[in-house]
Length: 218
Ligand SMILES: Cc1cc2nc3c(=O)[nH]c(=O)nc-3n(C[C@H](O)[C@H](O)[C@H](O)COP(=O)(O)OP(=O)(O)OC[C@H]3O[C@@H](n4cnc5c(N)ncnc54)[C@H](O)[C@@H]3O)c2cc1C
Ligand code: FES
Image 1 (tube, rainbow, N blue to C red):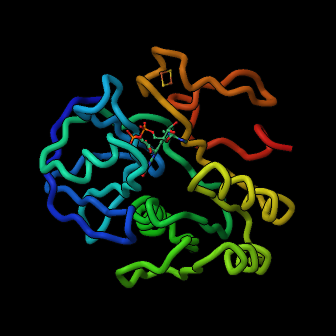
Image 2 (cartoon, protein in one colour):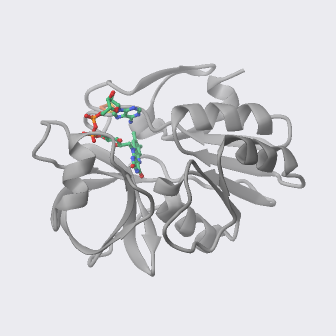
């Protein structure tokens, strides 16, 4: 784990509130690992999943408050990482189900492991993406119901989207979920990200963020 500065290469707007930020620098990371980014809006750093876009290190950012707004505006960001366990897919055919803010993570997983990627969005995107995109809740549910022949799924998005997706997919294949809940330190020091699981208490920043869905949900 290191401290480093990242300089912004490009800011790509996807929807009214969601952006891809790509950087001039590269750091080594594993799929679903994240960095903790400093902001001037809070004393705690903010976690963002690492990925790639147009062959550069990138993160997706959905603006939900002052920290995410700051990250989209700044040209230089200080961060530490990579944090968390990298996701190692089990064998067989897999697919990642994700929201637009997770596009860089999805691109990374696709390039490393050749899995399929499906993006569910509340609104149309302002760029073309190289993955199937469904817009709206009902089309998204229909897509999930139609998925067959997979050995594993990885779901990354909002809490609500993840639980809905898990409920549809859990009987079709092994389902992994990235639990992107509130984190303060990202390095196992504050115990703020503790989660009850069937196999005991886990700290999502070091034991996750990806867990088997069935460890947390029935
Ligand atoms: C491991 C991990 C990876 C993440 N990766 C990404 C990513 O790739 N792209 C991305 O856009 N976001 C990601 N997030 C979420 C992102 O870190 C938060 O959206 C961000 O910290 C919010 O900061 P803020 O100052 O803008 O909002 P705040 O002012 O901190 O919060 C605004 C509102 O959102 C709620 N909130 C804040 N953080 C979370 C959260 N983690 N889960 C649910 N509700 C929350 C607050 O309770 C508050 O109501 C990730 C989170 C984790 C834990
Ligand atoms: S965020 Fe501090 S222990 Fe996980």
